[in-house]
Image (cartoon, rainbow, N blue to C red; front, side, top):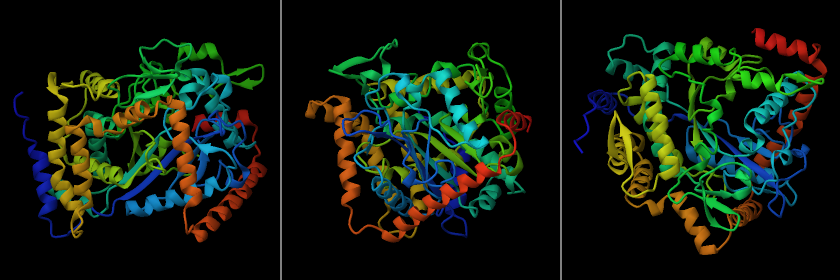
Length: 527
């Protein structure tokens, strides 16, 4: 293989940060996590109980909500400058939740527990308000469009924004006069494009869904192999969750959203939420007085688009995500391709977060040309190859139309991150970012160190099925949180107060409604 072309733009931008008068330009970026978990019964079957009232209102609680299902809890942290603070908050949040789950557990893996078909998965209910009903109908629509089984998959989302002090120095290095919001948004979209090009590395390093319960594909065609009774797998898979068996399903094959710039992105998303789809028209919107979906368009709303990474801005009340981006530009990015780690009680760990922070900087600083439709297909193909076959010996990926060895390309990216990690470690003698980088480098040299390989080895050693192993790990995690001592009683009390306040807030929203649901939906989509 010929040596890779030198990225002069990356070298120049990195040098500008190294030589800047102000130190710590990459330090102190804001970090947050959204972590999903299925609630399950002691026997490992999906919980049939409603979202516990003692956890507050899933509609209005800022930290404890639901994703698709009544049984799919989503825990959301605020933004923190230090990853240890984030993980401490997430740990406290888990401890609070477990105090109110009785004998139920939080499922420890991304791929779900033993399921008895779509009908066994209850759609999340958010109360009687118009906004709550819209959330519920949207989820009903997802079930009709993609099946409820896919919606039972869990994941971890990592939200990140760079420190504001970075932008003027970066603008100067790029010979840009204005470091304002338009510049910031353009750089974030450069990051998005480079994540599309290199994000397969995240699937390899952190993918933890090489196997699943056979109930997940019951009645569907698939090419999975039998690992043992009740367990299916692919021998070299890293993340079946992010393959065409999971989120990257064929139903959205006709939805193409450009990340070449803010205007392109908003244009394509707006087109997708306003273009009718014949298959969805057959489902109907309101049938026999009951809503089946919000509309019959390619996407009901913007959030239906499943992507590895999203540009985000905090929305105001009633505001669409694209309206927020139009109003204020990109505020942060949401990394969405992380599997729940069965080997970490909170589903994620500090080394992973540190690596992601450095990887975000790599994607920001590297040269990032526009992506055309031909390259777009190639990039999807690379992600799919890693999801299905990432640990396969001698695996090759498509790089600019040429086959290259996965391992060599991955090590090249790791090598490019060394200077970034040195900047993030500046002033810290323990060099935690460099240490996190070295841990990931070791996984490339030895695939047996990856979480996906570790999961398969656990199955082989224990002789358990996937469901049995995941249930055992769920029990280990539950005991960990309930046995933590001393608990942070002040924070647990704050969570309890927030739960009560969220219930009052939901009741107030329901009292304030004056429009019919039909009128509310009409107004929402007219905006």
